[in-house]
Image 1 (cartoon, rainbow, N blue to C red):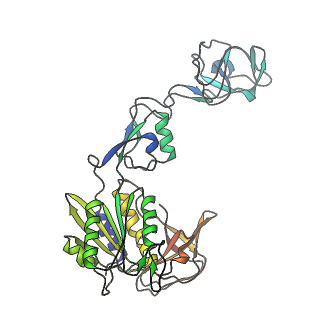
Image 2: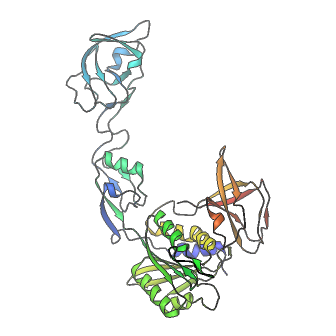
Image 3: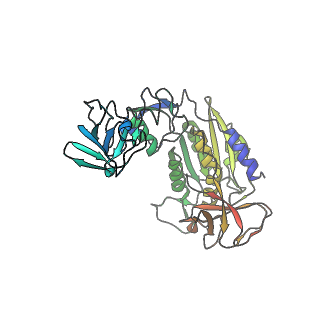
Length: 413
């Protein structure tokens, strides 16, 4: 049985990110949100595109107003009004000013903007009541971005700020990585869908739905293959189909040591190489990880435990970072751990690295962790609701007292 850290190292070393030549596509800007950028973006324009005003006020020559004050104001002639979007017509001469609005182009000759609150207007004259700083409230051309330099690097996830930046420089098409295809199947004769009437002894398949949601959070495409009975031939056909059509395959159940746990032998019969068979983690011990070379396209297979809490814990700990790295994300794909103060004592038997789910809060810049009430075991899905963190008790650590520090894995993307 492998340690959690050894398992993590094995899995992450197996990941071969998508190919920047073969696994990309061109998408319109409006469709680029949540996608991973496949190549860096550079543009041939500066930003701002020209000198412009950062304030409503008056565009002036600094030398005309540098010594003025409330007792000794500068009186300037207003020669033009420049709203945003209008090209200035005048060149500002000595003792002249232009009324200018936020975002408007600076007129030739002016180098400073005096905010209107520091002025008084009298017909076609403006009285400057306080000396500004030189070039105050002027956004110089190219101060934020210079043409020909890198605007955005490859390997980042495109969110609202990046979309805004791309729109501002009129970049309307992006080269992004294709979405990963992740096949999901559940195994077990006892499973039924949420729509079916529940008979005695049956269990509703919640894993399919939870895993599909988590895959979408990872900006990948879930392929839901449904429930497969504990019949070797049916299971072999389902897994073979999944391997042929996906980059990653997630199955839940069938990877323990029961009489009807066939997954590992089926993986080997299909040519899979098994790298992980069991992990010293609680919950989640029966975890299988295998690889397939499918027409030169490697496929990663995760055989997750069938118990719902165990399936989700192993997804957050191992699968989520794998999908993020595989998708082309250059940084930030690793699991995120924070140090928190335990609000109440956390216990384990110390035999395996134990994960306790609960609520992670940030209060006065200090994280605090409150474990979920009720039983913490792999079959109790109910108290996973409204949790966002997994406190980690290392092997041989049987108790973390209230008020002690604990490492917590953040569940979110």
